[in-house]
Image (tube, rainbow, N blue to C red; front, side, top):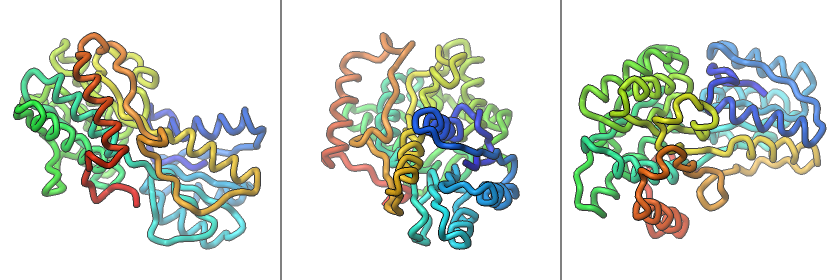
Length: 318
């Protein structure tokens, strides 16, 4: 496995993907190798190091590794590759995309966020303007809009405009790793009145949690990729819920298929229906989210799966 530049302890998508690797090691008895990337310049050489180590299945973690993964898969047709969070345009028999329609669960998160806002403003920001980030922001904004329509409210979304496909992102080259940059970005949204923050920025998103924690209960957050109350427990008091991606399960299944000689290049797309993405429990907010809102979220989840509630995002997996 080759990580994105956030490393395997990012409390987010690298960490969850890595759990799939360690689960495969303990449950399937496979030998594993891993290498952490610290910059984008590491990707190609890190993938090569896994090829050189004679790995049969190599998992790369993150949209930003797509080009290097495609190049390695072309150069090594006898090695199976799976990439988390990307559906490369180049289709290869030894390359399996592991993608997630997180717009679905983010829609639910937006609905819940709107229900919890006292200021009538909620905010989101991303690590980079790439599809695997903006898909969350699209779903979130549309969930807020759905709440407004259903309840005749006017909760505003700061930090993302779905129509313009533009919004607030952590600045700089290493934006996903910049926790301080994440905090500054979150504080900018709070200064504009947002009292629920939805950071979609990997490790930098922790800055959003820090901003919420420092607010004395005035600002709360919704985490992404993992259940934040498990992966970032010290922020649980400020976490309403999280948008989970079951990357660990997708990674485990890809490794299992490789071991059993059943590996294929068909894209895996995680959604609400197959539990590839879901909303986490409300934990400390269980008594604050009303029974009515909980029931509405359950109904929305069912309607999204049935196709009666539609989410529009150009970033959704095909």
